[in-house]
Length: 75
Length: 394
Image 1: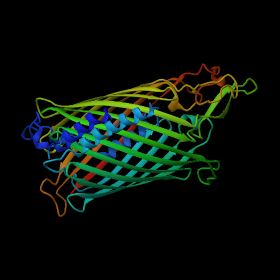
Image 2: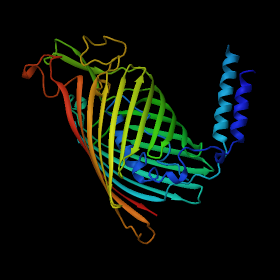
Image 3: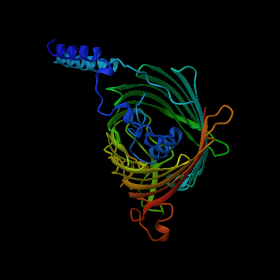
Image 4: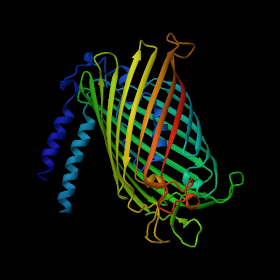
């Protein structure tokens, strides 16, 4: 039980936090470059999936070929 | 011991759930509605594959979107493994995908169903994912799970009159954790961790092992592959994207891969994106990939049934390959037209050079032209991939 208590405490602290309380070191008004379409991980999903399909059918490796989220998270 | 372990897991779960429940001051939004038409052509290694695809994505409310796509691959020719046995492939693969997406505050929930049908292979995939923006929108965490069931068959007839023998089933489960992090106002980084487990019929029925056979004029004979019926793979990719001092982006990524068949793969990729005004986007990329062979792979076994598991699939051979690619995107209809707000047209070409390090070319070389089994030159080939597509945003 002593292991769960700190985790529950951390959970409560995090649950009571709102994103407005967290001070992002890159402010929303500083993210214009990150919002540029050229900074998106995959601009064209069909094309990226097609190239992955070609590679996976000719190579032994697979998976982990994409990253989460878009280029910015500015919303 | 088991109780302690369960407590540890409960504690970690509590933190994870709390992280996902951190309340947000502003909600995430879904991407724009769009419709895409896509054409692709792959030529290389004796194969020609032409693909056509259409995709439509539509938001019904600000929180709910539906996406559907349809893809057809037409395959003609055959890879060297099949050509070595003097049979040809002419086949078609049809893939339908349906996706629903729902956004609530900072969380995006996605569910997808994919059905892929060939006359000798059927595959169904169901996937779920959850994406959460957090810490002032600097961090995006995504968790995903996919379950795939395959039915594997073999065409024992001809391309025109197929006779399909169904050989078995295979199932796979894929687990993904992605983390994307804004580090500076010019730099974003990502880490992706993926585990896939497979079970069932995992071999390619059209490919064969070869073994020394003095009674055969070629000096070898061909036999069926025997694969293990389980496989688990782990892959980790790290990537970074940097906005250069002028308006252009540089992306670099590295992926490490390992599986229970002892394949270790390393992938390196670099990509440069350069827009010209708001009309053109030019992109150039270079990718290098290297792997060792699977532990049950051999180009030439000493005799039939030498080992319990035997494979000579070229995907399992030691290889390296590199890709040079270029992409041009042209943006048009800047003021919109009827229901469309804007549109883009894209042309993408990639040239891939494959070198095999322990897979020999037995199609073009053999005893007839002075090569003993195992002395044939190593196989290599080039492939060219063209993609042309148009995207309309509305």
